[in-house]
Length: 282
Image (cartoon, rainbow, N blue to C red; front, side, top):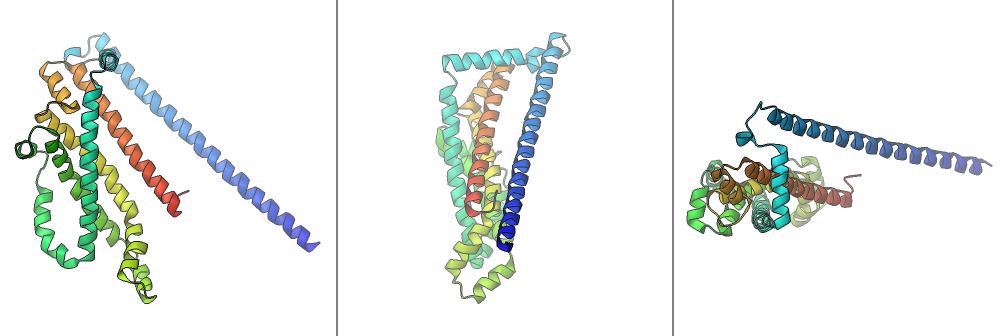
């Protein structure tokens, strides 16, 4: 009888926990829906106010364009397919520069943290390189690597590398020293300590660097394309600006914003999947 009652109590507890979890998920879904609705309202008000101020003559569409003109430009670009080759070039340059810079930055951060002597020797040189305004040096990158995709990739690498290196080092430094000492006391080797403690512990900081790095990679590529390029969305911005087509400039910037948002969401999604696999996320 006691066992039966205890089983019934356990069942009620499990039912209560299940209902609580379901309620929590329902509240989260409702909140997400409200957030997206509020965002849509804010965006709609902004676009509507912009169009209205142009219609009443409060602002000059020659300088600020208008939503209807930008929409017409984008529809025309998509319909005739002229924008897609430029999108592909910019996306390819961004992804290659991001991948190379991120991989090199993470590797450099790990090496510097594993070998303090290397860090001490390289610190002044890396500090000087990091404080250099690489975007301002974009013309030099074009001189060194040419007007093709190589110069844009190199510029992106130069920005992403330092972001990931510093974030990787910060992630490793932030590890719980008591955990490291405990692992050493239990006989863990340096290799086991690195793979089981240091690298997994630095993952959140590394992904923080990846989210920032992918944005800076796109920024570097667009700046390089605006200075000198045969293809790319940055080149299209420079072309439309030289032609005094505000709708072309703003329309292309809108496309870049969508690309940047998509890349950032991809990194965030990868982080969520990895942390869920590690058991650190719901």
